[in-house]
Length: 236
Image (cartoon, rainbow, N blue to C red; front, top):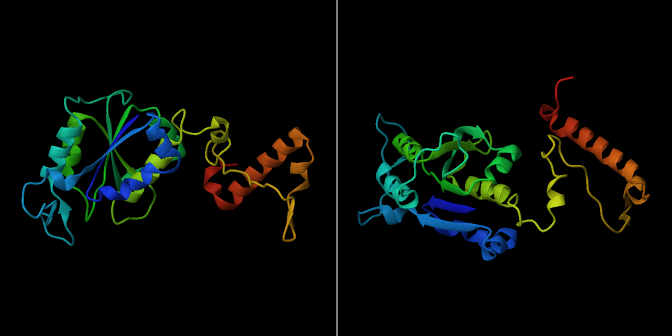
């Protein structure tokens, strides 16, 4: 997978050089290019924002640098109506669709993702309109809250998407039993020692009965989901 990131804080993404995603980059599974939006400006102050038309608080990111950045990243790109081939441009936005594990799995099959990190009061709407004329576009939200910029959201999405790409995780079976993969939260995990500071591992997990273990884990998933995220359960 190829990933392009447009941001005014390119060093934020240095963290992609470590851990599993860093290894995936070294192995050629994942290609990541980070683009500084300010390199696409032409004034001595490298200005990327201006006052909003119609008044209001804050500043809005200007369309000109974004247009040049998209032109550089998406040469010859055409709209992909089916959303199955070609580049997909993703802008983190509180006004977007909520990012989920299902979306992460869907996006892990893409060949080229472009992330645009907004700042201030947002990006000029015409940037979204223009990007939509060059490629598929999605506005995506991490949840019902507002961040200072899109970098944190993009990092979270890349982490969630990247680990689902074949070859990134050493044991792919570990992905199957995670939270949200089957619509439920993950069951609690334990390791040695069996007793620690007066707290014991549930006896069923060390009894060797795999059927009983599977049943315990399923019940633990349901109980945890019912207690913490009842909204994930189907109506009774």
